[in-house]
Length: 114
Length: 112
Image 1: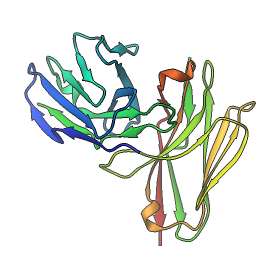
Image 2: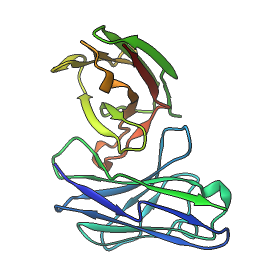
Image 3: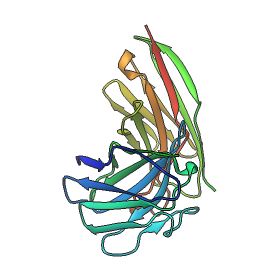
Image 4: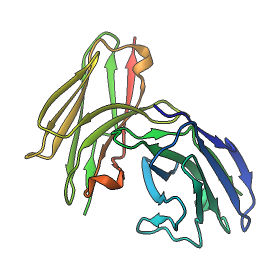
């Protein structure tokens, strides 16, 4: 199994600013993902974080708004840029190991934009 | 398109059995997953089905019928700690992307 930590656990930000969320996995994994969970909703995949190359974004999400980095096999960052109240959500990092079926999730970052 | 349906809420009694259904209509299929999520916590993996039939793991079992686009999660001997949201998720093709598409989740309340 993999243990995933995220920083910060929560933040309150003003509209127009940006926040970078860090995700650290305790073991090397092949795939890392970023999800969003809006209040009372389920999880929506934002993008797959690819090591050493640009992330693969899902429909409705763009790099300018959600730039992602993954410099190595255990670390990734998600930036929420030019925030608006609609970006208030929980952002979760997840990871999948090679040959492993289950996806592990971090505890999430609760973002409130005022 | 992708569509995954689950009941929004369910209530059951401690010690009883509850079945949470999930139907899916997806363009392709590479496995169905069930996750448990307690309020304010990360989702945790419960089960995985890729072939038709029943998978049992302790008090939890999950069933899949690919021809019907249908799965259920069965929880036996319910405990108060089973109060949580249960998320059904499908892995679309190609399976090696690791992506998951989640349903809206079913909030289960277990009452004494």
